[in-house]
Structures are given as C-alpha cells and as structure tokens.
Image 1 (cartoon, one colour):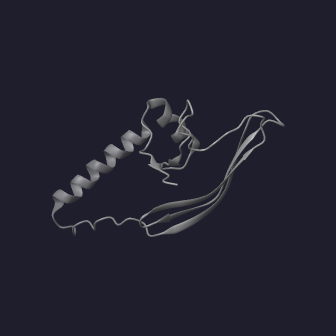
Image 2 (cartoon, one colour):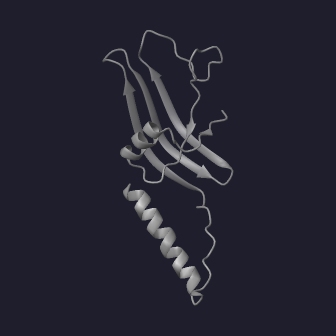
Image 3 (cartoon, one colour):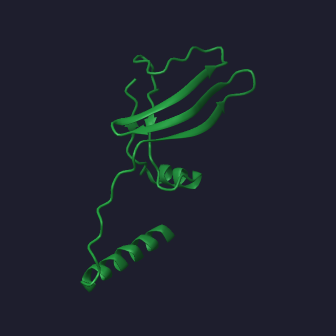
Length: 123
C-alpha cells in the first residue's frame, strides 16, 4: 500500500515536472555495467545429519547474462541431481531480480503470485 502510494506520488510529481516545460528533458536510464557481488549465501534444508546445503559464493552480472559460483552438498541418503529431466519436480534454477532485496518483498511477491521474471541458468 505504501509502495503504491509512493509510486503514484512519483508518477504524479514526474508528470507535473514534465508539464512545467522549463525543466530539461529527463535523461534515459542506462543499465548498470558488469559487476560482481561476493554473497557467501548458505541455505540448509533438512534435519542434522540429513541436510541438503545450497551455497552461492559470488554472483557476476555481465552484459550478456550472469554467472554464479555455487555449491550443492547432499548429506542425505537420497540421490539428488540438478536438472534431472526425469524428476517429478522442476529442479532447474535461475536468477530473479527484486527491487529491495528484503525478505518481506520476496514473501509478499510469492503470496501475491507476482514474482519477477526468472532468468534461467543455461548450464
């Protein structure tokens, strides 16, 4: 609700400035250049002794895509394969870019069924 009000306020104020005529035209936005973020992100699923550990060391965004240094450690008694075409669930993965990076945004977008577009991994 607050975000919607802020967005509406921004649109209104932006329109008002454009109608003024004295202001210089807005500069077009430019995509951020290539960059690397050290994440050291770690998620553990399952009870102690039977865990699946997913880690992302770093993420590099490039002009033509993205690259991540990841590790998947299976400490369970069940085989797990990434991208298994015969799996009953989709185990593919990719990158979703969120505006704020806050957990609450992820939870709200999931609850509303409005996650950002998935940028799938190709290998």
